[in-house]
Image (cartoon, rainbow, N blue to C red; front, side, top):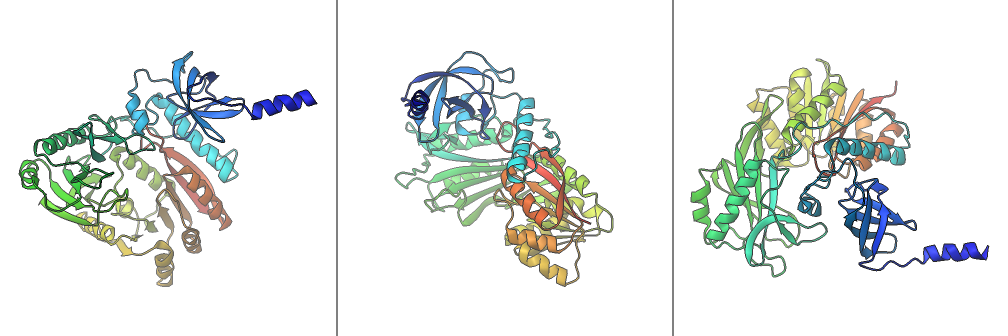
Length: 463
């Protein structure tokens, strides 16, 4: 017994030293794409390591409950490994899974949904469908938000290293449209030529904080937004002259805060219109600087079509589009149903949605400003009885008050589009407590090479 106690005590007190080299086998993968190695049952998270690989790991940092390491040498490699991956994409989070073959990425993302349904929703055997993959695995993003900083005395564009504000210079972003990358590089060189200084976070000085670009996937229209610390600065008129004929919309966003928010509260139009136009599922949409619009248009079209199919829409249906944004989901199905009602807390988005309805000659879609948990009960009192509710919330998921308001309508079907499997699984439990059953779950890969996964789910009211 004393011997066993000594062994257990030794394991508990095992000390790891920084820079120590440890050999081990990767047994798992975190949702952020780091390999997991356990040494004496103590987990280390290792970048660019895949399950079943045998590696030599250098210890980088040791905490109370886990540590971090880096691969020093691969003793064996996974058949799912992508060779010659640019590790910059892994270190910045641009492509967390760039080192993993695409079929393995799809399998991993489905497993994420399976795992959270088991742990958070107590559904160990739910038949989650296979992840719907993308035809275009790289160069798909229609939007870029690129920091501008000084690196070794030179103005650079790139992305921050994970968990830091150290800019890593990048000129090819791998998952962005090449036309966007080209414009970012052009603007950077213009800033250098005109001696327009990048923002310095430490000293709180400089002019340009970010370059934001939106591009219409089908239209090809381009919007360029410079996020700056002041409205007027030397070189601005030269920039306007250079880019007014290159882009369809050129704007400034004036951000004087010291926080991490990209945009400031004030925008100034320099040339063109304050929006670009693109299409999705045959409908045209005006997209403003702040508007939410899925960054992978081709996959978003698959996602929304899948949601419509799950809903089994009927010509006489009344549909609520909660978190309606600029109206992409609701307007996409307006010609399939009797009425569409959408609500959104951002007034500008509601105006966008109304404009987009008129742009497509849609007269049966109605949009209102306000939180869904307040607007829906009012609509019900006014005699509006929804048959189907579509909800596409942010990563934090749904407030309990929204779930109670939605289920109180007694809609026959709720279609839940989620960008966060964990909050989705939590909300499934709440919906079932209110009398709705989870019938079908389909992961969709809107963000190839990254850790993110979208999920479309069908919930139906118990009879």
